[in-house]
Image (cartoon, rainbow, N blue to C red; front, side, top):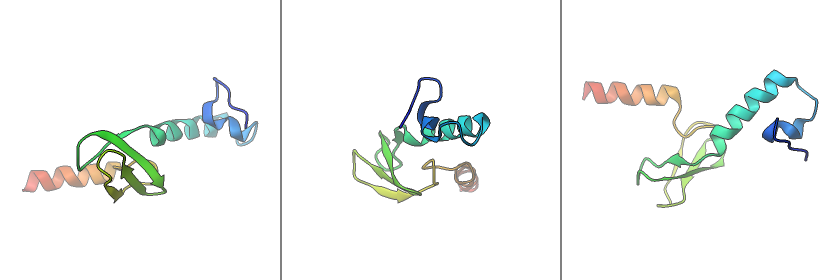
Length: 86
């Protein structure tokens, strides 16, 4: 699979699908593959196991989340609302 410095992980698509879509894919892919903060132990160790399933490497907790991020924007907004009401 050809990956270059310029296109990153979207290099696997070659010249297909257009540059704009490939740039969007790279942005989503980078966010998805980075380590995220665990909701249980508060350490950076959460990685994606499968689509919507996330697991912490530090404490072993598994939980459901978004397909590409463990905490989606609507979930964060709902948490803020619950905290504000309680």
